[in-house]
Amino acid sequence: MSESGYVMSPKKRWLIFAVVVFASISISVARSKVSGTMVYIREDWGIDVTTGGLLVSLVSMANLIMALPGGALVQKLGSRKVLLFALGLCVVANIVGALAPNFEVLAATRFCEGITVAILFIVPPAIFAQVFPAEERGLPMALWSLWSPVGTLIVLNVCNIVTPQFGWQANWWVVAAIVAVAFVLVFIFLRLPAEGTQVAAKSSNKPKQKAPWSKLLTSVVALCICGVFFAAQFGWQAYLSYFTTYLKDVVGTTAVEANSIVSIPTYVMIAVSLSFGFLLKKIPNKFHPKLLFVAIIILLIGVTTMWNAPIVGLAVAAISIAAVGMQSVGPLVHDLMPDAVPKTMVPMGMAMLSFSSALGGTFGPLACGMVVDSTSNWGLVAIPMGIVAALGIAAAVVVIVKMRKIYSAKEAQA
Image (cartoon, rainbow, N blue to C red; front, side, top):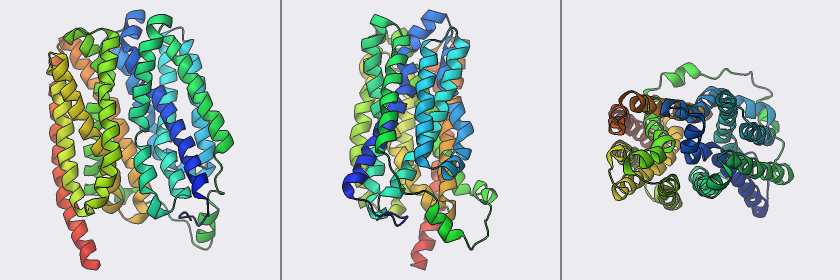
């Protein structure tokens, strides 16, 4: 029985899980395809690094705009309808992108893809909470976190096969087909209990209350958790945007070799995801802030040193270190937020995490691209990375201090 009181067989739960995960991976494939084709797009249209990075930043910008209102949209229309809308929009965006006559049209389609990404950050957790009992929800949540690295791995390998023979636009057609399959599967198999009926029944005799955004936005610990996630995404999205170009221009690899190298951390992230969820179960929550501190340091060491790796071996080591940190930071911030804020504010806390993620993903590629274009020196990317890293580490220290007080208060109440 799920939290809503709806009884569903385990077989149907895991069927829904599989369909939602496939849909999530398909959107990840759509989001990450520019990383594997950036070199070809720049050569084809003669654009600089900053302009090329805009194709990545626009996705984060759209996510930034949709992060907070996205939850209200899901609550009003239901998870299934919103997910179908996102998948349909993604199919159309990829078809238009494949036929784009200029950079402006392609950029507009990337903004539309960003809307689908924003929706994806909200819908699957809501669906899992609806169909899985609370005590069984940890495993599907942990496995679902693989959607992003798996999608990235798939699209980088697809780009290696498709682009040299058919051009970078062919990847947009492939992605459109994959997302269209996901749309059909969701339409056929994703059947959920009537959303909102239980909530309405519980709250029909109670006056509606406004969401206390002001209280949440003045919560130091919530803001610092978001600050850690911002720093993580700032570094990671810059890596996803430019490291294939860095390997080609500085290390001297071919575009195909660069895509293969950049896909290596995906395997690391998959291994971390499969093991980290079980580790968190065994370690009491009060120690999780310290784990977050360690994880953000590991990540930031990787993303600040990778831009000065002169050979393939050192580059692989740096990006693998970053992958360990990134795939640890994500589960930890989502694990800490429900303990950091009152239960009634947990959805808003998650929306803030999505917002901070999008903020970091927007400014990371822009800042780093501007550094390279103005100096022609990839090594100087470490400067903005270092500044943001210091902010992220400081935020993690504050989280440790504040969460210690919260956990001590909960232990005293118990």
